[in-house]
Structure formats: C-alpha cells, structure tokens
Length: 95
Image (cartoon, rainbow, N blue to C red; front, side, top):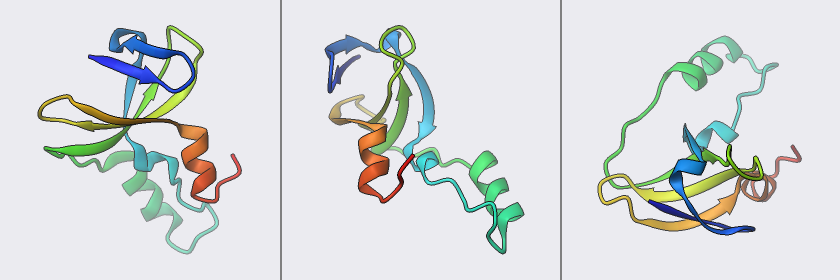
C-alpha cells in the first residue's frame, strides 16, 4: 500500500506505524465532569469499521510526522492524506 505523504510524496506503508482511529486526536477534557468515563472510552473502546475510515499513521521510518489517512478498510484504497497537526488545527486545537 502506498501512502502519499503531503510533504514527502508517495511512500510505502512499511515506513509507517498504524495507531488507530483518527478520533484519538480529540482527547477528552481531563477537568470534565465525566473525565474518568470519557478517558476509559477514549483509551479502550474502538470500532472496527468496514469501509471508509479516518486513521492515524506515524511516519516512523521517515520524518516522524503524524498523518490522518482516509482509507477504505475493505479495499485499502486511500482517498486523502493530511498532516494530523493540520487536522487538529482545523478542529480548533492548538497542539
């Protein structure tokens, strides 16, 4: 599988480490009322979708950047690759 890195161009997926669902960018507020429950859900509960899915990938054997890859989990087709920092910034997160 080839991942088209936004800065470095096409790279083989063997250069990357898959982390999981890209919603991991949205960490719960540790000061929230249900922080304990929210962090349990955040850390341990995962979906296993069939079809289009946004995922986090780490470019371990390259520039060590985090990417959000929109990929079909059935066909492995990739429709979009973004820097995770850009996605987080677009969602209003500064870090």
